[in-house]
Image 1 (cartoon, one colour):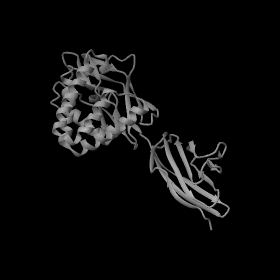
Image 2: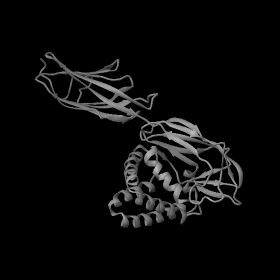
Image 3: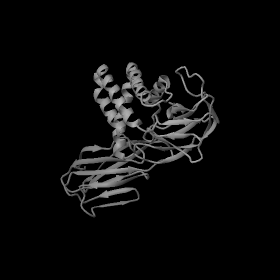
Length: 335
């Protein structure tokens, strides 16, 4: 009978595909042991801790360690590949052995990723003469995330597009005005909802410095999760939060922004698991019928790259003058 005793074994219950995740095992034994990890084909070790140089072998998806710096502990960083399916359960078998016998156990990990699908892409959308606070177009590009991971999508216009996406940074004085107005409005919101003050401060900090670095996305993931939790539970806060955003926008630039579609967009974030970067960037739409030529680039919080989706269509502006609308108003996110 083996005299090995496993004191602690950790493999996280889930992880996004293509990302790294930690694992460790601690044990007690009366003599030196060997540790074997039988890994799925799509998982490989990236870092190994407390192992002497040359003290391990990795072949045929099996990691064998026989020489430790200090007996009793093994730390690991593992990484999965991107699977064809958006969700999969894998098993990692850990075996500890000495001359008296073996002690083994198996841990499961759920690996997931986003899976973006275009459910509806009309050939033409038309601006409504009177939006009545409901929507700005007669139809929308419908997007669904059929996976479990949060998808981060970025709309990239093509050179031939007659309708341009304007980033706030490209509009003179917009950023300064918008951030000043937003900070003022969020401070007022904090006085109404003091319990959410810390989250609102974190949200403002994120808005001030958005980028696609992994560190920034990790911060964004935490902040957005907090906002998701609040808006799904507190309808009054959701309405006030949407009005704060829209109010900051309207007082900074002449953009057609309706409260209702913004509220619906914020609600959809909580259920659709889709984060549209530059969602409040501006589409400048001339009068008449014009081509909007664009592709949707897709990534996630692990910065994995997924196939782009073409979302080109015609936009017909039947109003008498060119208009500017927020980018999010062109989409409907389905959960």
